[in-house]
Amino acid sequence: MTSFRAGAVTDTGRARAVNQDSLLVIDDRLYAVADGMGGHRGGEVASALALESLAGNLHEPSTRALVAGVTTANQVVHERSSADPELRGMGTTLIALALIVGPDGDERLAMANVGDSRAYRYRGDHLEQITEDHSLVESLVRQGRITPEEAATHPQRNIITRALGVDPQVEVDAWELPAVAGDRYLLCSDGLFNEVESATIAATLQRHGDPTEAAHELGRLANEGGGRDNITCVVVDVLDGSGRPDDEVARVGTASEPDLGGYGPATTPMPVASVFDAPAPPPVPPARPAGVGPGGGHAAAGSSGRGLEEGPTGSDGAPALIGAIPDHLPDDEGEPPPPPRRPRRFTWRVAVFVLALIALVGAVAGALVYYGRNTYYVAFNGAERVTIFRGRPDSFLLWDPTVERVTTISSADLRDTAVADVAAQPDQPTLADAEGFVANLCDRLRSTATPAECSATAATGDRPTTGTTATTAPDGAGIPGSGGGASGDSGTTGGPLPANAAPA
Ligand code: MN
Image 1 (spheres, rainbow, N blue to C red):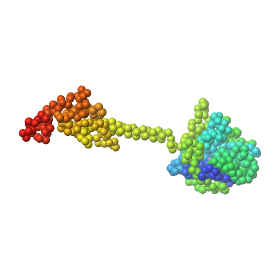
Image 2 (tube, rainbow, N blue to C red; image 1 turned 30 degrees about the vertical axis):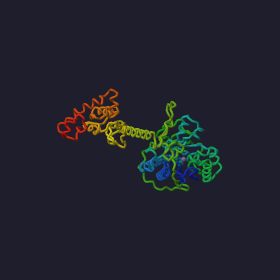
Image 3 (tube, rainbow, N blue to C red; image 1 turned 90 degrees about the horizontal axis):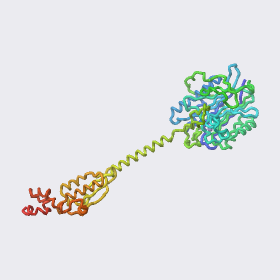
Image 4 (tube, rainbow, N blue to C red; image 1 turned 120 degrees about the vertical axis):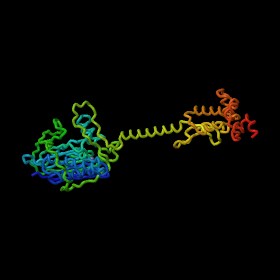
């Protein structure tokens, strides 16, 4: 009869305000670690919800049931994320170790993994990583683009390529392993192995026989190494087991990676069952509280999204990644892997939109200024002088017309019809048009008027002289005066009409 002894620790670390990791210990049955991500409460909720769901939905001791439980947990987290805007985009890693019963009735271990939390097996003096990280740097290592040493310090090493709860479906890696007495398993979040070298992890597991002591020492070392992330460790010792050390570790295929030839870390791929032959999991029942063992508390959420702490847009905790980067690139010609998706908070699309909006507003404003300012009219100013104004008489929008030029022509100099024309303030599209209008007024002066403006234009030779103008004036103005004897009309000032005016 297989039995275990486990110890666990989870710690916020030194840099984060809160702990988004969660862990699960159900004695002799199920052990798990989840590392949540997402802003506000998202990470906390995702990791806790995933483990709660898994604990409540592991219906039989089989690899298939374990993977189905993880798949169900994915749906539960995703549905909650979709339903609550505050939790949108949240996700979590999940590494789980369960006791199963094989077809022959033999007890074995099953492991399921999504994300970049890890499971190690410590046997003798040898620490072996069982899981593969679903991370950008791991993909790059697999593709030979960077070395494992470069991956360890890569600035984007926190970007993961697979997570629970982000999409309606998830690919789950699974393994079956013999239950060998004396083996020690370590499930941990990246807050441990990013701070503590594997040799130190191995030495610590060697030094501390008690799994609780070992877990706490690992947590302490991670804090000592920087504590830049939440730290979670579950140490599981196999006390009794029927398995033999030379029994194979069998990796169970995942949906998108049917061909596992040459794939996997130091283990012989030997699928024993395809968990994906199973029918789709039944509708998600409400998760019931599971028997969470010692150390199984769910930690609090963080304000910072994991995976983005070093990215330019990761300041407030959106999920880092998400979008599977293929582990195998068939016939890869050296094209770089697709960049991980970024949270869509302020993207180049938004920037382009804002710039376009600014340009549009500017264009409209420019057009209005052009319309309001690039025109002229002629009117009498306050001193009754004929004046060329720039702008529009109605003070279009906020732009008052400005005086372009004040002439010496007064309203008294002009015949009544000309005064009426000026009073109508006709638009002059250009300054030349306005000047032409003024020049035309010089043709319509009262006979005695000699404004300098018109004298000046006369001097150019372009216009009739004032004398000529004056002599023509009575032709129009004198008729009503001579006929009706109206004293108020031009006859009072018209030189040529004294004979008519005198009798009156
Ligand atoms: Mn982490």
